[in-house]
Image 1 (tube, each protein chain N blue to C red):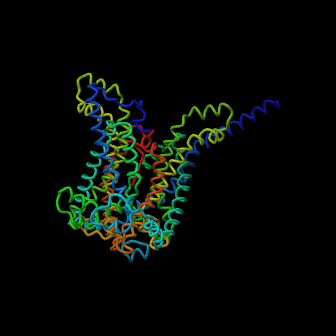
Image 2 (tube, rainbow over the protein chains, first blue to last red):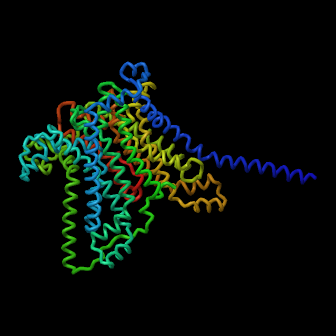
Image 3 (tube, one colour):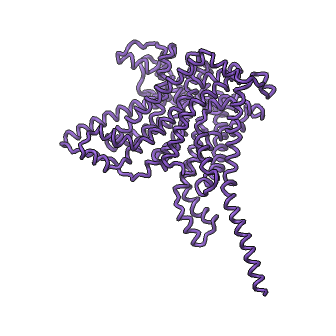
Length: 317
Length: 295
């Protein structure tokens, strides 16, 4: 009798213990995630919600002091959509992004292919150089490019003049927005090439040898083999790199802002600078928020492509 | 980690056979091109360092002085004696160390959940972590400013630290998750078969194996927090409270453009990042194909 009762008792307690352990097992991941999720909610999710809300509000200095915006419906949006300046800024940002991203991808891939061809020593030297460039902080890069294109003592003007490419003595690159954006393109592409080259090179080095051999046996010229074998295999990498580059270049801000001493004239406005100007310089936070929302929408397309590729390649398991 | 690293790592070798001399000539041509690319890419960095070591009259010369023929450290002494330099160093170190510690602790727990447990909402959280990295800071800064002014956190290092978590944390979670996935489950299981508790297996097996991952992730967090400019620029108004990047960006406006000290200051600001970057170079090159983010 006693033994049966005892065994029943242990069984029940074991079951209880088991279910508690199971409960713990189910709850554990959520408990582990909670702190990070809370931070993300406070500093990312809520501000994003606030951004959307502010874009429908009149939010100026008065509202900033009162800590409360005034609902005005879609007035901010209709105001920017009827503003010719806004559309110029949108077009400029898209064109600038397109130029920067294509140059980055083409030159980056070309250097990655070059890395396969050069000797061992040169490969190590070139990789180290690329990593060195990659490591330069953006603000440092801006300052050193600013020094190189200085109108009076800049090394760029001297070199271009010596190369007989024209008279660049005392040439001010930022007097004309076209050459000004030329400098920004060079600065951004220079800084972005290392990431692309090194990543593509890592991918190239892992293209199965046999496939290229088979293509060569079938009579494919190197270019055809590259196009038919290597490119399709590297497509996921290219999709990810291109979408990341679009996302980074579309929101360009600090390069232009710091290079032009925080006083870019309206010829140099990109969407990020325009939104910043409307909010922090003329205190129209609602208008700035509406511009920022449009900017996020533009970038959303690139983000979707990136996410889809990440899900597809099995990054997300 | 990435799709490519899962493919067997066979190096590509040229398959065409050609006469040796011609092949060697070709190699020399490629090497020459490689050298040209190297020079063009590295020149700006060289020019910064070279300028930093030149005396004033060699900098302000109409014909560039390619080598610092009269090297001097006076630009560096000038730079560190600029107003607020040491304040900026102190602020940067405070911000960076707190951000690294906080993000590492929070990210490790979250990454553990994502890598070692299968639960409802896991995939959704991963998609959020990935997507959130794509939100432009330039757009987010407007509502962040409103939020922080409500909370009285404008012009305070604590506010900046919390905001830095917005971009450091998702990235750290993603990277650490990759490292944790790299540890085979069998190792832990066999430890538990041998009588270790779950916690014991965690401390003895998992922790040592992800040690390098923790180091790499904290270095990445360090670099991102050290380099950040926009948030620090908008939120820290008082010169005593600015970080190094804000100090560097406002350097030129202090008294015209004094290129020597500016380049010396820029070199000093870049130095820690370069050192850390070279330390984790191999990790960057082959591990982070997809997850890597550089702002």
